[in-house]
Length: 254
Image (cartoon, rainbow, N blue to C red; front, side):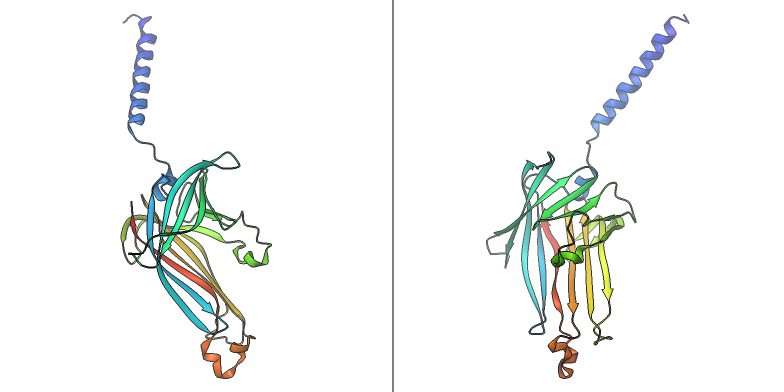
């Protein structure tokens, strides 16, 4: 073979390999990791059955309400920092036959490193990327917890568990999900320590591929041992708690 033709042939081979590689990559749709577990496209919705709980410490009762909630990706915009973001509308209805009523709006931003959701003037880091079993982050880092009303959000250490595992929320089975454990904290137990103040805070969310959030469980209550009802020896078995909680289970989506 002519030595002068060798570099030309080598370049031709390299070009062919590069072209083939690029073509194969182009043929594969690029899906961001965040789109797997939290799809962001206009018109995307998820409907939930909701169990809402209030612990009324004044009347010493636990109140449970049931209704439906729907989250819809309704619009896109550029936020104040120049980032592509989405508006998420939340609607509610008491029964399936009732019309949906708009309740509030939240805003979602996927930065490529984290998924932020802002609502009620609070900004949460719901997910970070890449997703990996056991990976942790401070999900409430953007919240000013010096405000005593929301100080309980301080130092929540979110953690990925059960990555790419199946999950049932009691209504629907999902093949591939990831669970975000946000907090599981307990200080004392009113049942065994009725003369001690107590708190309980629990929060976790489960996300399914192609759907988004399919389960949420949150509750927080406090117990004041010195409160009138709890200090009454005749009412001690009631254990009057103060707080609220909610469980969301996805039942439909597009």
